Length: 119
Image (cartoon, rainbow, N blue to C red):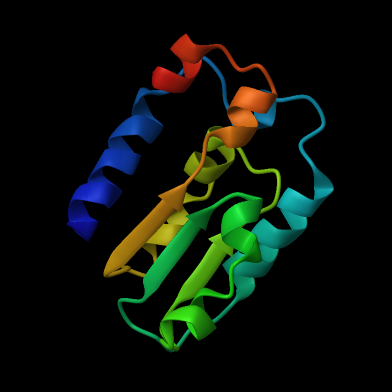
């Protein structure tokens, strides 16, 4: 199942051409700082359970709730779908056994057209 989720994310990443996160005005500095932290972070866990998404994801203490030290939280407050797609290399380098994905709320709040989100 996790391979299917990753495959869908990769296919979506290659399919989006209308807009990229870089083209959004004033990409938040917080996004850049947190993304850089994730890239530098060394993890000893192989095949972790990975949570990926926005502030709702970031705010969860998933390790404690699931009592699983292999859990990685890759939530970034304010993130949008294009931001997640930009980070897929960092996400897939961990070879997660499962990915829990919550993204899209901020796309809607920024009035990203439905057609762009669906694409």
